Image (cartoon, rainbow, N blue to C red; front, side, top):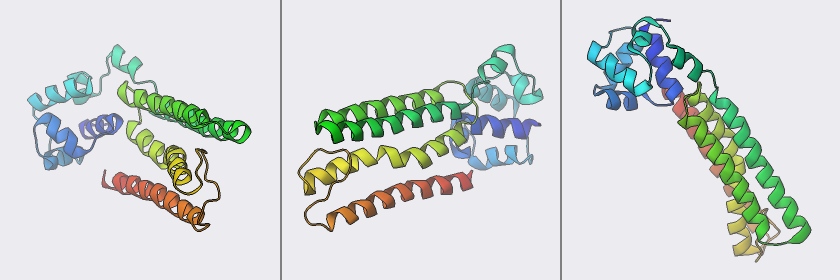
Length: 204
């Protein structure tokens, strides 16, 4: 792995674009692109700024020599946090739906949202602490969890408007065409987010 590879790897691990790195370092996006494609090498002052920004040593950027602290800090994979977050979000949906099915109480929706909030917090922690594969983790989270995170809020809005209940899943409403419209909106929103993530990944 050369300097170009290390800069690109550090940027992707942090989950930022070339433009965001350029802003942090004080250069143009084209300069970052040239660094990562081996067309040029950053000046030493830019290397120092990047070492502070990425929380690594200048020796790592220039030579690939990892400090003991850096080597131990970068062992965790951000995708582990995504798995935990997705699990909590899924459990939130199941708990909310099961509770409403048995008791029909508004707290069913609240319980699900609390678990999903905890899932989002776990995901946020995974991006905040030093971990690997942050970019992949971020993309995976939104491509998968958007289907879970939007279901409860959209179902609640739909049911309040058309079925006059607080159920966490869509009930048959009035008019009957409202239910197919719900699924159309739900699928469209989720696919839109998935498409945006795919497009963003192609630009990086």
